[in-house]
Image (tube, rainbow, N blue to C red; front, side, top):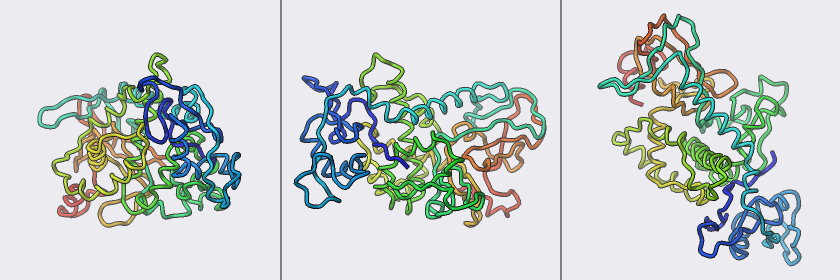
Length: 394
């Protein structure tokens, strides 16, 4: 899989995160002469970033053992000579993530269409909060809606598997040969269907690839951190998308994020999940330290996002066998489906769609207009009461 730089802000130094536009005596950022996809405020920062990280990333170094200007290095695999920089228009950085930005734009449009449909509506109910009501009569068997996740990720168990697509969860048994899976050669962790997964999906991976490589041990040992990363990537793409559309703004970091803000308004119950936050402290610190300044958020925001995922995420793919809680191949954050309340006498059912990360909500009974649409959160209502309570608790 072709590698693309993870930093995509138009006017941020890849080493220090400083914004050229906001600095006194503003200067144009300098572009890496090797790959043309990362930017620096000065030559010193380019050299520091090259020695620390970019020598392993640069496209010029990705296909050859030495950089174009390498003449003094004796170790061709660890060349510390950085390519020359060139002054460039910072707006060109957006082209590195154009396909990933289109993915965010398509998701934002689909979410808006879903929430403005005529089948269901949201309403505030005393003592229950925000609930989902049928906007008109719904007959049994009707697909009420389908929803794609804001962010989704394979479980740690699935990440260890070498025979499954880490996006759509299609196993190699569904294909003719194992070569049907493309494993990213840069992060050497995530694999995708060579034909089933769209170029849009692979473009999203180019934004996260370097972070995945650096944080591989975290993702393999701590459930849910990859979802946090992908949510922050979506926030970053939302800012870039707004900056792309608003030519009056020169700093994407100042752009609003209404979709991400919609996610952050979901129930978190942080007061009940203090132990969870403590257990994730080191993983969250590593995640934030790996991100460039343009993508960082306050640590408290990540803790809140962690609790939101814990409360609201749904399993995707085939169910596992890890006790009474049916953990699937992966998890996803679905802002509309998460509004649906739990009932042991549900009138709708949710299921993960095969071969793509999406949920389908189907009516199990005739639902009258203005009746709440409810699902069950547990794997099967036939469990004994204490097991159902345990599963609901978790």
